[in-house]
Length: 264
Image (cartoon, rainbow, N blue to C red):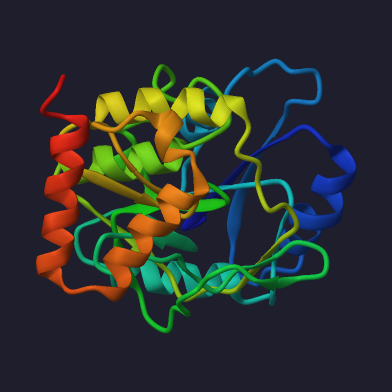
């Protein structure tokens, strides 16, 4: 019998992989296939290439792409994910952390860091539609993956491949969901220079998406990334969007257009 879920992970630290993901997979009660990709010698230069390689080998109904430092909180997590996925209409991609213009904050039940703490500003009690998903864990139906792979050009490093996939899936008419699943994630992630290199390419690719809401902030293809990286700009814009009414939000977005678009 073919497993319902194929778990794909590319790892570069054997100790972290064995102590986190592999350890928690071994206690899962749901039947699953494992495709573990050893990248300790740097064979793959990007997550997109490595995960596409693993995804093409998958035989399960769903392909779960997960980081090496993720741990499942109980033996029934894979089973709960499988059950939730089967009930979702128009599924393109699902994950455990995401954001959208409707909620304008990270929705997630993840606990991360050392010591562990909640990452999400909004707890997820039922599957929730979002615009984009975080990369730590995402699931794609294999039939969707046959049509849409991770973009190895736009995401030529280790960042934003799930954000890009969420937006690309939306263009094909699919939806992205955050699942009400609790996991442990040791890393908080790093927004290094490679993150912003990928961000520039993703924004260019999806320049008609307007505001792009991610778990690491919100971005617009029409504004210089150098300005958007300024924390006070992010906080000002986010505060206005969360606290003020839609009329003021429209004014703010019109002002953004006048300052950064009209003059181009």
